[in-house]
Image (cartoon, rainbow, N blue to C red; front, side, top):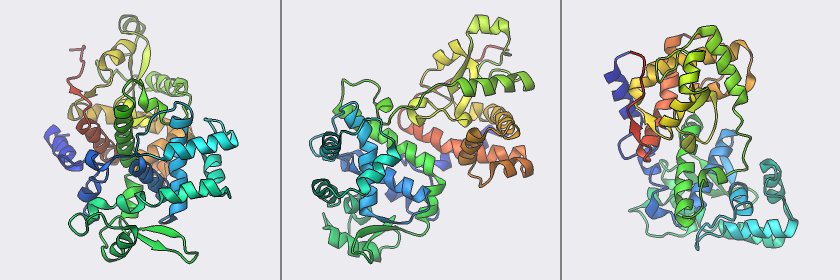
Length: 388
């Protein structure tokens, strides 16, 4: 495939200076400004957006303030209760988390769904007062890029009225039949958020890491302190890739060398690299893993290799992996590919689709994430190639 064509497509996927995916249907440029540094003095907007993403992913477009605030508290629970991260003088999420933790003696690693249910259904008057206080700022101030030039520091009531008039805004604020304040995701925005869930989620997490690092300058590994850690054991993924290497006789994407005992001895054992760095994507999903040699993985570190130089080889490698996990009915990995390929049924896609269609969908899914990582400062370097 023409590398210049790939480069042109990559540049269009994420507009210059814009950290969110392009869309003809919604005002993505204004949306990209909701988390600009000069607009963020607390963690609220980032956790608010993560909460919205989760609700939309579950098929909800009419959402109570209380449900979103509950999700915000659940997101902030682990970094505050476990690591005591400082969220800044303007941020009151810590007060809520500490109150719940001290009052009910809940563990830092409590199941997130259980925590959400506990908070949402609580009759604790003090807790409910804290939740209500959090609704006075973030729901309408999140929309500030959309009402710039229309109103200056408007009240919730004013923004509620404006949100009914301006159909291009991401959501409308209204009161439901139970007199509860809610948001209603606008038509087009629900599809945009659902379709680009992983990309936008990654963008928000990166912004959150930057926000917290500034306020906790001496705390290492902020990215790994945001959620209760899953066991980052890559044994399953390594076994899958080992089987693929044996069946397909694939070579190392980065060096061009075959996976032989001689090369393992010289360049290190088999190692799983994250093509887009783990410190950006914060997951170990198959579609972003590349089998390589340990020493090569260490050299690559948290850098990005040039997308246009590697996308064809990476896609071929990933197609082999995709076919393998489908044929072997690896359900968790199948779901991971379904997400990045944006198909309703990955098994049916494998049966009915072609490599060309896989390549297109894989590129459409990974290119925006790669470009956001590059835009956010991850260094793009030349690759490592040993075999002539």
